[in-house]
Image (tube, rainbow, N blue to C red; front, side):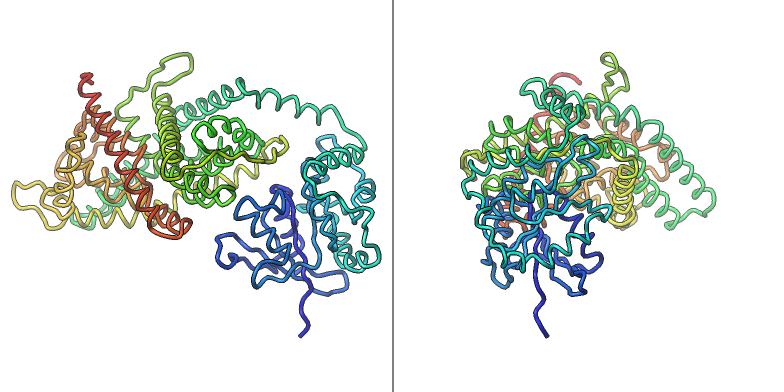
Amino acid sequence: MSRLRTAALVGNPNAGKSALFNALTGARQKIANYPGVTVERKAGRLILPSGEPVELTDLPGSYGLHATSPDEEVTARVILGQYPGETMPEVLVVVLDASNLEQHLVFAQEIIALGRPTVVALNMVDLAERDGLVLDPAALEQALGVPVIPTVAVRRRGLDALAAAIASAEARAARDPGDHHRPSTDLTERRVTAQAIARAAIVSETRQHRLHARIDRVLLHPWLGPVILFALLFVVFQAVFAGATPFADGLEAAAGGLHDAVQGAMAPGLVRDLITEGVIAGVGSVVVFLPQIVILFFFILAMEASGYMARAAFLMDRMMAGVGLSGRSFIPLLSSFACAIPGIMATRSITDPKDRLTTILIAPMMTCSARLPVYAVIIAAFIPNRAVGLGIGLQGLVLFALYVAGVVGAMAVALLLRRSVTKGAASGFIMELPKYQMPRAKDLFIGLFQRAWIFLRRAGTIIFTVTVVLWLLLNFPRAQDGQDQVDASIAGQIANGLAVVVEPIGFNRDMALALIPAMAAREVAVSSLATTYAVAAADDEAGAQQLGAQLKAHWTLPMALAFLAWFVFAPQCMSTIAVTRRETNGWLWPSFMLAYLFGLAYLAAGITFWAATAAGL
């Protein structure tokens, strides 16, 4: 059997390579990691016009063959034929973003300078034209000396022409080596040449296209830009409480109604108690915070889709440099606000190994969405719902302060790490700024649906399982006459032992008990508290009270503030620790992470409790 011909898609990040790869290969794909590294390898079959199949590889985005990150190292080694077990691609397909041509041409010239059969896919020409930029592919082809095919991957435009160009690339290269077109290998010269080629390729440019540059001058201003960013984030956290309250109240009322219906329909017994105290009280206490999750991710997804999120990384570069990191660390840290797991995995694009390790170690300090239910239930129970200024609610202000505390704490830890165990100089970074665009309602809906489904799936699997197990541990062995059921239970005995350790920082038995299952998922702390109080008050009229009322009856304000401080710094779920072990290739750094985060959480909770108590709160 003859060997398949090979081709590879190369280019800067955000050039649309993945969309073009999917369009060219359809379902004929396979995904795996490159041997020895956690960098994804996507390969598929491209069918040429003659019917001949070609093995097409989608290489990680890169800014040059001089590798500065694991992703770029893989790309360079595959292109240059230096990767064990990988065949050097016979045809290189350079994918350019038509709306950011000058930046993308720098790397394109380096690829063309190799003298290999090369085709250029001028991608996303529709978006460039929509924004008022019209390009001349023929002028680009003349300047670069290789075929240039305009494409719109998502609409499957130009795919046949691209496949034909790939089919004839080797024959064309053999006929015309193109030495007179060979670009310089010097970076500075390539930048100057890229600017000249891009300007010469522009047929027309409208005022709308130039407007984006003027917007950037405001949003990326060194002083005004950060003010706008933090003001926007402040509005987001105000909206999380103000906008979600009616929906959360409705879900809470529905959970209460279901609780009453089950109690009325079933005879008293352990099965009814399991459903009411374990499932409804436990899982239901977490599900009611779905509106807050949806609102938070609505803003995050909208900022990403509009192109603003990448600009936030540039704004944060100066602050990150102050603690020994670069703006490249900002995107993984920002991803960690959703979940630390993809955030830690996103550190693969960080060039410096010590930068990457530092970012991994502080990523769990970003306030992931799993913490939001914990924050929301405590804030709603203990922080008055009143305004402290024009349009500023106290509850939203406290939530914003908790997120800021996590960021400030992470920056302080990064500074200490970069001056000790991960010592090194801060490195700069290059990141392409995507074009501004209005977020598509369909994309937002799909993104929100996915986030909501992930949250509800966790509630129906991890949280449900842990809550049921906790209910069983809280109910057995059964209490004797006059004995408190929680104290008599297995879970109660474990919690009473742990309470000795956390009592100095203001935690009682119930708070200590909530810390244990929270290691499975942070939201379980809420269901744990709800289940514990439901079991403790099963024979009491107080058992019908909402969780917030139960907390106010059993906790003081200093205790509540200490609990919040604990969750700002405490390690995230065990899945995060497992991913950290995989990304650092051992248990040394995950163990270090657990130790310092637990130490910080204990210290922060203690200082908060002691200060609040001394202040008479």
